[in-house]
Image (tube, rainbow over all chains, first blue to last red; front, side, top):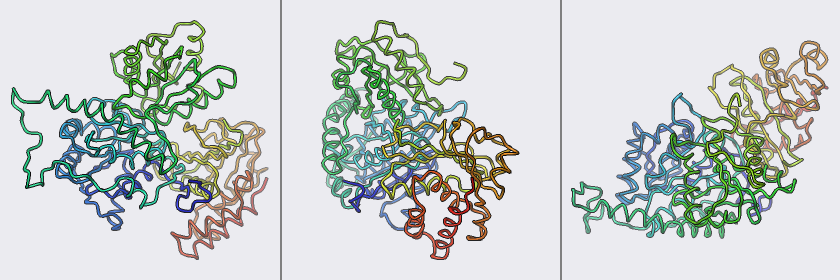
Length: 402
Length: 190
């Protein structure tokens, strides 16, 4: 789609949140149950305006908390209705109990999580501690760099969630304020293209099918099948890897925008690589370009699919790299490192790859990250590729007083 | 980074429309195939409190979402900010500072130190009051920006006002804005 000649797909100037609200409008799900929280607020607010204006048919359920929002979503999805919601930070935390239930009841809900720090001190700005903390809840997790990616991921949500091989809830992340509130370019699909892409919701076992009455999520007793349910969830995650890539590929056929589990940049011959999620990825690519101009073979892997984790693909992409840096915008206090770092170390070990590694913690509570901060990390990797050791402890980027 | 990249910083007070002005520039860029980005420095939004917003314009996709550290252009929507905020912070010696004031550049340079940076003034609030009947300096500031950067033209501002802006506002308001844009373009002083 060429922006200048294609009047159906003109570039628009919108915020990340407006982009996602537009996608939700075009999807027009059966039910949206949501509670507003900074910096997700505009998503819910704009969608409520679409409801009020009659431009969507969706049943918009206003609830008194995020715990209720997710509970309403579970009820709705269990009844077979296409269901969406959005949250951030403390709201995400308040959904905690219900996130696990949504996944284990195999509810194909699509949720936007606008990444924001968890308090304290009280902080409204971006980091990934909310969604990273929810990584074990059984949801598919997809991270997005900018408004376009967030919009596209929203459109791709139901085809992944509702796929018979998956049938799991999907959450899409993007950075609070940095993307949610920034005005950037968006090339939207037409309403017809969105409808054709997502298709009608498939019928799956649901509460309202009186011909085949079922019970969902009851007490399973001491000798029940809880364990087997969990195994089934993991198997669905395993199958999801292929399904997600298939949806990415089908989306590329419509839009020309190709997504992959890992978005690699200059990785073909890279000696050093930085792994990073969301909006900071652009800074990493800018620095990689600068290093390449100096003759340093630097590359970047942008995390996209985090759950399920594409272990084999990371191993393949990093097989010949001498030093890998992992940028985490969240920490796992007392752990080996940040959540992405731990994941990546495990993946490399499993595939017998022994590149040198370092964990860069950055951007907590919205601390800005500049290209020169990413360069600090890259320079350590460069030295490591030439023989130096990398620190085993966390390296903090753009820390005050450093 | 792309050599075509222009980084702009807006200084205003909450409620004056710095973010709206940044958005207008982004929309004009979008309409003409330029790459753009506009965002405020996020914090508590209080009416009257000093606020900062950023715009990036480029021929190539913009990958950096960090705050603008070294703006080539600084726009000051409220001259009372000059004694409160260092509007030149981080701006290189060849940067341009555009101040909304009825004073001339030489008058404000006597009071405030802009270093070697170029200083332009524009009576944007006065123009807005005259044309729109309201003290909203956005449109003349945007046309001052167009004149000084050449990143977009007065004609493109006019098109934007007539088409995009015109979808939301009555013709009278649109034409008043077009007039404000023309006056802004004419009345920038160096």
